[in-house]
Amino acid sequence: MTDWIGDLFTSDTGWTHLETLVDVRNRMAGSDGEREAAEATRDALAEYTGDAWLDEFDIQGWERGDSGVETPDGVEDCIALPRSPSEDATGELVDLGYGLPSDFEETDVEGKLVLVASDVPDWYDRYLHRREKYYHAVEQGAAGFLYENHVEGCLPPTGSVGTSDDPIGEIPAVGVSSEVGSRLSRRYDGDELTVSVTADVHDATSQNVHATLGPDTDEELLVTSHVDAHDIAEGAMDNGAGTAMVVEVARALADRADELDTKVHFVCFGAEEVGLVGSAYDAERRARDQIRAVLNFDGVTRGRTLKFYAHGFDALGDAARDLGDDFDHPVSVTPEMGPHSDHWEYVKYGVPGYHVASETGGSGRGWGHTYADTLDKLEVRDFREQAILLTALAVRLASDDFAVAHASEADVASALEAEDLAEGMKITGDWPY
Image 1 (spheres, rainbow, N blue to C red):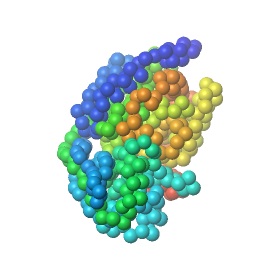
Image 2 (cartoon, rainbow, N blue to C red):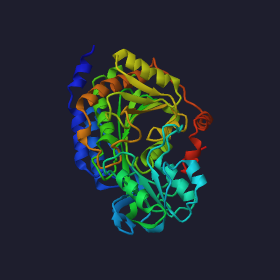
Image 3 (cartoon, one colour):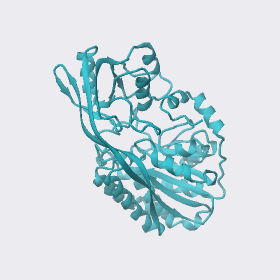
Image 4 (cartoon, one colour):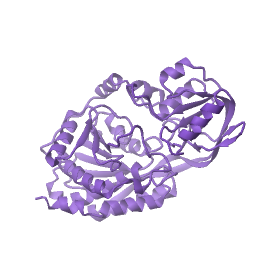
């Protein structure tokens, strides 16, 4: 029977929930808006699962104030990076280009303001996360950190700093647009500037949203996303679409519950954007050996073709490729590790897990983490097509006919070392081995 395909392709459920989320506007971790979005997601899931609930936890709260880069000729626009300390820093501006580890090794940045780009060169063998560049600056004694967007359009990038042990970063950090960064480098490289950040640092709470479907088995398939978003935009791509997809898949699976051999546990996490806090909280409290796999939606619908990070689990890669073959629909499979997003808090322990995103044809986050992450960038056609594929995949993963073995933590650590990801994780405090 294929009636479910037509039903999903004409459904407004997920897209309507996406509109609900973006209309909240500020879903920053620990905010009233994040709570409102979580409650709306709980209510939407309960409609199809019969029950849904919130699990609350404490986090480090951070609320944006004013920020600026003071030059001899005036103040340049910027935005504070979440969890930057609320303080000023004065020093000589040093443009480190891409901010590769070798750039920090070869340049004296002690007591200086470091300007780095948000991308890496095409020839470089791996992606460098913002926090890795930030902590190279901290380790080398920099006074402040300026993160320059590589995407044009007067769009300063956001994104958190800090670690799980020390949630507030050590030096002031701001994002500047490509245009401001270019101007600062051209006119003031080597000059003394001041970076200022004001922020309200306080205790706060966040919450994870839970619901279940299917048989009452000890083993579970986790279908996940994150509810929170950065406060500067609607968070449509990152990650309203992912949470809306969880709701749509839950609606579709509710009609196919008799086909599920394994319990499906939906979890929409809080506080992802400030260090995967919600998923870390959940993973520490869950019987991880009873998780069959994690199907994490973060970055879906940004492009038409789904992209599956399979983290070295061959059975997951094969299932994604088979999915594309069965529906004669292109999919992209990356077998390597991807230690960013909520799946990672399980995968790092050896739990099989996908990070499901989509191909965009560009480098880095594109519109993500900027003012431009808005609903108008997404297509309802792409959302519906992907809902069909992801529902079919969830049914397949929950079947007794599917099996995937857990890995050992030693195997995961070895893969990270082999893929040259360990260095960055160690400097950011994310190395758990």
